[in-house]
Image (cartoon, helix red, strand yellow):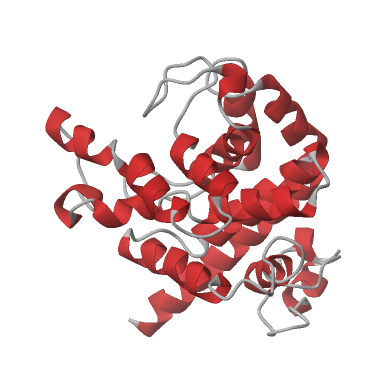
Length: 252
């Protein structure tokens, strides 16, 4: 695709500019994620579906997350989950668990959640409770036990050095093991107050380096098998965030 074609490429849904990597989708990240979220994972019969999506988005805003973090990691986790299981009920649960992974941070005070510098030991102790706080919230929703397990275990590590329970290997639910890889991918490729986001190649190198320690090797294998799709999704995110930053800069 030429530079002229790139400039002219627009989302067929909302008209937002597209990255070259997204040209075959013809959808910007927001519209693409909304299409995914409105397809298999969320169930239309769930009366609280819209509320849960809104709650996750509200937490993103409170935490000053970039763009569509919660929905992005939920949809990206689905890319890996579909390689492991084709049961719609399980896929839906993994989606909800990934979407609500940090919902327990609602119980973390702003002075800790939004602190710019490093946390001290007492602050880390409070922050470290968020998986259990989130699990209590999600477990109360009917039929959300598997999602609650993902929320509870999303900070566990394959080598047993995670929290809150120090689970290791297959003792960690599969959905949480898949999510861990995606969460790292999104974190590494997103801007933070203390650093710029790195590219997909850097994220891939870090994920491969941590296979067998932080990450389940089977989850990393699924990541590699879906590399092309995930590269497109990350490119879409980066392009949309750049457009938003340029728009904000022009408005000031």
